[in-house]
Image (cartoon, rainbow, N blue to C red; front, top):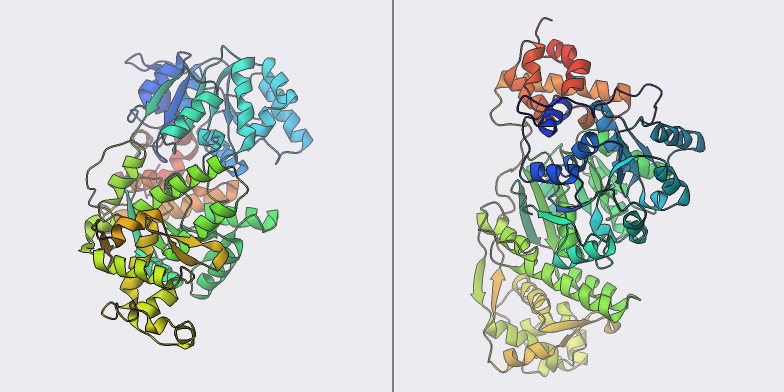
Length: 617
């Protein structure tokens, strides 16, 4: 991808369209689209004119075009700061497929390759240069850019600059040097995930006080959100995959490396093509697993949060969590990796009290400052509110980012509204059991006491003689577990990590115990499926004949991708292939009208496509 011996001819001098709009002309010629979406046109105009910008746009919303087109329109090379090697490789491959002169500078290049890229920069042979933040901050790279005409700086994944965020990267803090050293070069910071606090931090740390802010909707309407009570988590996950996403690509997130390995091995034994990914694996294994995920269909990667940022794979049909993330930002960022192509996808999570205990323990036992711990607890509490809400998940999620929404009809709570019940008395009984047993025991033991189950411990401690013993015998174990989980989530009780998970009362429990507060809880009793949101055929509108053409096109794309050594989706997205299959154009002119087929791709692949769909050329 960095072979610059024969770079494509420059595109930056593209003629204006008949309407006189060079940006739209480039969009059509290079990317094969006739019009911009949402705020893209406004952002492109602003940045192309030399303005700084902060762009908040959801994954799959088209952030990349907001700096790619201005880089082509402005004289010089657009410099894109990107945090991951995999992201750069994919972006460069996709750009070069479209005829854009692109390359990257990162640690994957040897000295000779890096020197070739640097020479191409100084000779003005590149439209886009992707650079890792730690590389950009070096004197060698800054000196290189001093000798080069720079069109703009694009800082991708800008939330990484936030020390409060889930993806904080210290090297991003050095990017303030861009404002100091290149004051006349426009800068655009882009992210899919930033609450109001994070936005302020991005502006401050990147010196973007004068930048214009563009905030698109955070809504991803194609993603269906579901959070289930954790019982047999692996079994629940397997039923979810088999029932709704058999043979499709997905990501399963776990908190620990050990759990990643064990879950991947277990899924493999159940017939799921699962691969582990975490920082404990050697680099060759990690790279190999990531490449298989990107280049093959139907791979499920089980991973820690080390996996996923910058993965451009558009057809990830589900993201599942077997452990609770740390915050809504983390949850949104990770689930946003599903359905980048705009087609139906699922965000599924199994959640239980153990997750709350684990996350709070991690916060309390960390060496972070008290301020950081306080912020982390608040972020976790917000996520717990999302988990426990009886209302629309999407409304709650959007509200966190300051956006109002209406019930979506496409989350578990909308599709099958959970029952709510007046749980004031059960909660009082639970809190009383915590207090009467000395605030030294965990949930399982407290449920035994409430249900009147005698064992060696209840006898030894004399708890079988307490007034709370057996007062909850009319409530089953599952319901009691839900009560205790929500008692902790609502802040009526906390977990004493030094006493092996014992529950202790908080100040918030006092008005409940005194009968001054009514407590309503959610009772989640729902079917395991809502009907599959996914479609093995990309579009339900495709006829059997269209589907047959679509499968032939996919087979051709896979063979071509293997020949070039690139992921299939950098050649064409599924949506483009589906549009070709449905339209069945009989000429190159007909292909030119398909969204996603720009001038260079038409020139490169047009005759092959016509041959695959069965037309004589």
